[in-house]
Length: 223
Image (cartoon, rainbow, N blue to C red; front, top):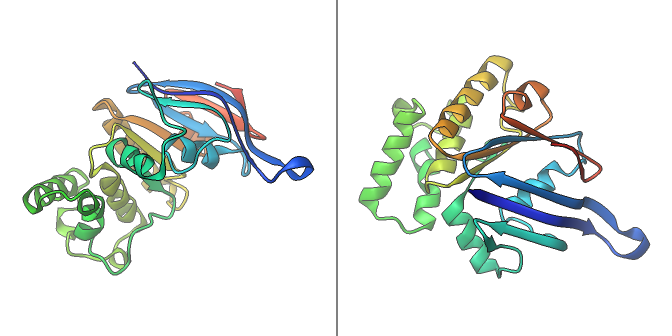
């Protein structure tokens, strides 16, 4: 089943002669259950593409459909609902809240979705166990290693049971050994049916994915 379909997507900034394209003529389809990497140099449009797929930004030209439903054109509240129901986000520098415990960082998206306290506790404890962090539930981010922080971020991204996990340079702040461990977690999640899209500049991470999309100057140069 086609989960994500982009047709002739442009994203630009400025107007007239000062117009600068972040994305130009992007067309691609991603099937449910794929594990895809998006690679390219800094400024190639990787993060812009990920933000559009995740509903954090909208294209200026073109059409984005998710499971056959048009996404661009939704109002901000509808976009927020789309993200909450479908998308999990993981970023390079973890984006954990320093004065919240590991438990509360993972629980944050569940609280936004007004999940019952019982269900919230069950979900967070399950994710802590899956990420081998049960003994860190009451710790704070400053007390964790980089790899542990990234596992907390992955758990938080999974909290609302997304069908797509978007990871922007998820190993960029980690040493090679820890990065490979995080990649192993992604593969295990993908084997469970979660569609995973990883933005990376690391060819070794990209080549571990089943599909590699290369960008340059806002355009797809290979897929």
